[in-house]
Length: 442
Image (cartoon, rainbow, N blue to C red; front, side):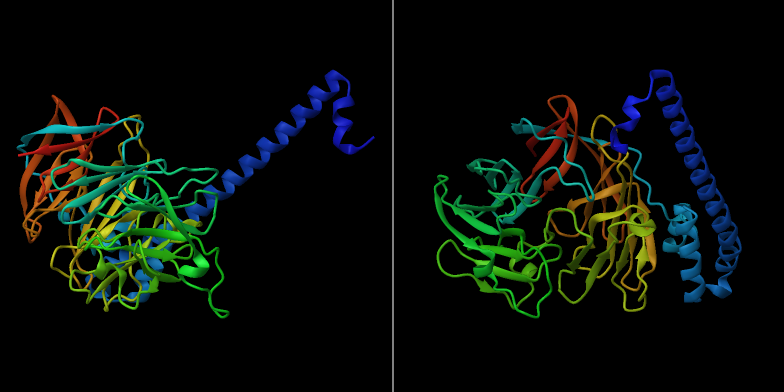
């Protein structure tokens, strides 16, 4: 008789006793592990306290070694408030940008309601992809459906990718202004870019090997298509080849052969909407003049995964660690100052994030302040910026981060939480009663 089945032939009372003993052993092991971890935290908190006291001394403000030691002790002892203090360079509470107390209500009119799309979340979670493609087009995608709209919010085309055993991953699909579209992963990990006409007719397929042939000395990866999107003129698609951050960027039109891009791909795309969508452990964003970059870096696991690093200043080689920092980051309009989002995904039944923050730093790394809201969009004049607070209201900050106004969108008598706004078009997507709604306002 094998050992694997021996237990099931033990008489009933003996089996109950044996299982009980195993449970006790497991509980004891768990208690020991918990106790060891508690001791670990106590040990690192004890190391952190004197380091923090030294760091708070103005004479030690430029001691990079002390800063690194304090940061590691704060992370190991699970004290994110100290990590925030390090990022702020001192008094965190004193740097908060308060929302104006008086709200201005804006009545918006629903243009279209989308069934089956869960509330879209901020930060690193992507439940649907929304992109501004060109001046007169924007798009919405889920893995199974795509919608193309003109500047007045009128539906131009829809796409229904014939998913077989594939899922489409994060970027799902991408339109051109005429309604033609591409997608990938019709078959799981098929490494193929598939082209469709505006009417949904299959036109052609291009394998990754043809899009960007691999080189013998190139890095190993799965060679999937990471993301794709329309260029800012609506002539073709910018496509990332290779998993992760990708190994090549190509440009492809509905007709003709693809070619490798030798310029920064974001220079071809619609400005101020310059990010791929999805889960990444590394990502870069350019300033509007393409002279500066902000870099996001986060390990896939381990104690530092909740404290990603953001680097943009030549004077700060170590970068700035932000607790719960997310993918909602970039440069302020026409500036080398940056904003960095942070959010907690302890979501309630309404699907909305908790403890939203956006941090602001100048080009040299000095903290300019923070607000309890997530960066949402720019104003139509490209100067002010809009932020969605935890309760769904919108704070508008002027240049210099001075609070300008506090807005509350209402759709059909119900409060509406903005997800993506196009302020120049007076159109946007909102979460209303757990549904996605496209709406317009005056």
